[in-house]
Image 1: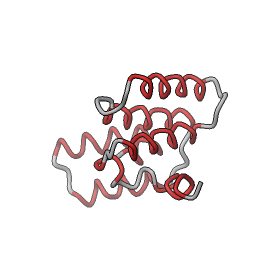
Image 2: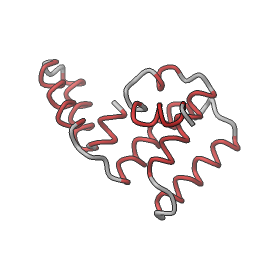
Image 3: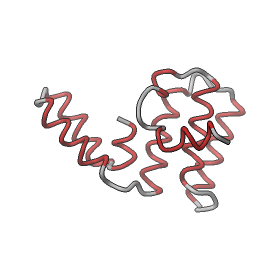
Length: 117
């Protein structure tokens, strides 16, 4: 779902509502497919990364938390690319073995970049 949020926050909300209402799986998959085709904005990347960070908040150290929040501010001021936030989240998720976060497709675009660095 983070990939959907990153690509289209509006569609993310539609998918959440559809799941709650028991809408047909085909309709939900169509919404997800449409979202994945969109290009993320800096704001949507920040939103998704922050949402992902909330999922591992209890695993990270205070220093990691402060570093992540400082990076959010830097990205908001356009002092760093939005992908830097996603890379930082990926590294924290790896360090803390956040399997649920790592097993999805959200990190597919940065995974090889980080693993090959």
